[in-house]
Length: 138
Image (tube, rainbow, N blue to C red; front, side):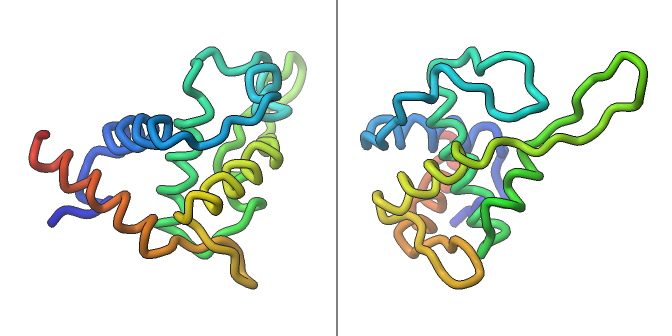
């Protein structure tokens, strides 16, 4: 039985995003019109950005949980280019991560604790099954 660490991350996130889209994870109305953080110049171009971000957040909670919004803002942030000074790191927006947490909690994949969000047995099983399917080549 394969787990999340043994498979290609990109394949896992793509398959998890597809499954989350099939399951009907609610997509916020504003997601097509906002940037993901102050360090970005444009909005995401992918139509399935929301589902990819939810899958990525679920994987991060699986690996690093319990984890909060602040740590994930740092992880999803980027460096912003400047003309006359050095590049500086800008954190990502927190509302997209919070809404991803809320959507995944409604599906039963995450739960809230005092120290942050943790993955539930249902969420762990979801990712482990996908990892096992990827490792078998299905």
